[in-house]
Image (cartoon, rainbow, N blue to C red):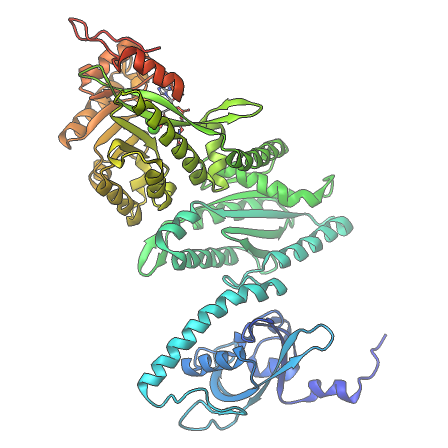
Amino acid sequence: MSSPPKSILEQVPLKSSEGLALALASSQDGAVMVLKWCNLAFSRITGFEVQEVIGRRGTIIIGRDMDQATHLLIIDKLMSWEAFSVTTRTNRKDGGQLYVRITWAPLSDPLSGNRWWLCSLVELDHPETGASLEMSGCPRVANLDSQENFENEIARLERENKRLRELATIVSQESNQDPLTGLSNRRHLELALNDYLASLRKRGEEFAVIFVDLDRFKSVNDTLGHEAGDALLISVAKTLRHLSDSNDTVARLGGDEFVVLKPLGTSALNISGLADSIISELAKKFSFEGRGISRSASVGVAIATKDMPTPEQIMADADAALYHAKANGRGRWSYFTSEMHADANATKRLATELLDACDRREFVPYFQAIIDAKTGMIACAEVLVRWQHPKRGLLLPADFLDVAGKIGIEDKIDSIVFEALGKEIQKLDATGFNLPKLSINISAARLANPSLIHDIRVSKIDPKRITVEILESVYLEEEDNSLLLALSELKQLGTSISVDDFGTGHASVQGLLSIKPSILKIDRQFMMTALDNESSMALFGSIVSIGKSLDIKIVAEGVETKQHGQLAVQLGCDYLQGFYFGRPVDAESFRESLLQAHGAVWEQSEKSTLLVSID
Ligand code: C2E
Ligand code: CA
Ligand code: CA
């Protein structure tokens, strides 16, 4: 069936030699826009296909050869909704230079109230010589003749341009593009997913959903700043685009979450190949301001097949696979299996319960004694968090800290525990008993967060009485000075630093030298194996002597038996901790046992090796 002949008016944009385009603009800011229509002449002049133009921002006509002042003045005029023309040099899609006269006219849709720009382009055969900027239809915004005026104007426009980038997010919700990375946005992904699901139903075309999530993105943002975070996201977008085919949909869901939709084709092998490449490419450092910054990602894969009862759930499946990959140590990919559903649901439930638990302040500090090996007296108490769950009873950190970290509420939990700790310590002090020190576990993310110092102040506990236990992995982030800075701030308050679980990660003397802790806690796995494994015992001994040579005090963890205690003393440990002296207990029981034993936990016999438990 042939289409009806076009009216004279309909033929105008087709036949016009002037390039015409219509862009839908943000109601808040005229410089934020998405192109919705263009004619053939616009496509011919700019070198972009009509289809390529649609959905792009107005910057499509800003080529690299346009001078910055012209670019900024265009933004300025667009922001204030003024009609104007400018004659300028710019570039086509292929980079070729051209001279154009661009005219912008603001339009308003009386029905929807939406605001639009009509942009027209005339290609000039003979460029005007001299000034590339010529404004018409409006007075010039500023006298740019003097260098000073020019610089002020540029500074002002750059400030406004920053605001513009923020507003771009608003318009991106009306468009299909993520403003930061240029990938599809969530809205476009949903549309594409519906198309994929429709082809699966109609023609049995199977497809894969690949979720990509950066590991520790928040710490890049927190420690190196948002610009580094943005640069990282852009680098990831480039990598994903480069690795996928042109007809795959690559989207950023927001934050550090990316999704690739890919037709399955003839084999699922290309999907696992893609997942492998994503993991290995994103394990390479990326360069920011001349520095190499580590990045890594976890990936979850799910495949929508013909015989699936509910293919609509495919996104949730890929998310569950992603969670599985993260929980299994990050930097890897995982393929969805049906057992993961149960896991994912349990995690979701736990996340919701944790949020309620914060509101109800259900987290409490438990205390475990650390003993001075020479005097047998209690030297310190390690504070360990417990969740008083209304139905499931007392929960251990292993039951909830991972999920708490994933939903970003570790600092909330810490604050609740700190507040309770402050009160408990006041009660203990009121008895007249002197507990010299409190040792508190702090995650790396928490360390660089200023709320830690705030929490210490609020608790009213003397910072000199506090030791913070950090995992040795903290100094593995070698580019990351902010953690060392946070440590030195704590040291200035008089707080001691202790390295926890030493020997389990990539323990290094260099790391110890950079952190300069006053205490080293040797992980209990050494104690567990030292008695019947000579090399483990030798390693234990050499860690103690490294500590001694650096003037660091040593805590032996995991002292479960008398023999463990004797061994730790022989090897020269300064402090002992473990179930032999007592398990972690609530504040009241801790107070009672301390008062009963007057703080003496270990009584020295003639041979000075008799250990007495406080339980
Ligand atoms: P950790 O810092 O190594 O804490 C010591 C853990 O070892 C405690 O487990 C304690 O109950 C256990 N333990 C102590 N003595 C012995 C022993 O003789 N034998 C054995 N088998 N285990 C012993 P818990 O309380 O379950 O804590 C587990 C981990 O959770 C802690 O390991 C710590 O890394 C983390 N954690 C606990 N509380 C907090 C907290 O408030 N914040 C943060 N960020 N992490 C915490
Ligand atoms: Ca600890
Ligand atoms: Ca430990």
